[in-house]
Length: 204
Image (cartoon, rainbow, N blue to C red; front, top):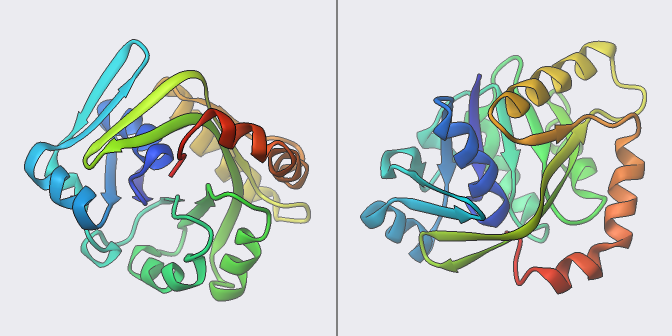
């Protein structure tokens, strides 16, 4: 399974680095001083009990440098969602799934409106992490779990695809879940957002 992580910040770098360390084909996008540092010194991720490094060739400035993938982890901040969506087009193949790991409950609807032919899953990442300096991600102790899945009324094959992605993540040591109701998960997370922000300087 080929992955693209759009936004190699606290969330995307952790889950992407875990998948890459296990030998999966994972590409990351970054920008500015963060990308410059990665090109010089690799993408470095440190979490309790584990440190991982992603080589510079896995990190690029634009999705156009990646090409079609099976799964996109969309980890940009919510406010540039509409601007970032068009950049996703080079990543899309006939069976690409986009998993939104953004703060808020409306991002998936924005993605669906812009990419009506694409499969979009809602998602939440429970993790306390931050970019401690350009090129370096630090994950604090606490949860490191990802929850994602299709919305109510989606074809049954979409749930099977979500479960396949979950199984790949779980195999690589990531705690991953596909809930019965992703909308409820999104709203509960949104209600608890002040708590999450208090425990993490930045999750992107």
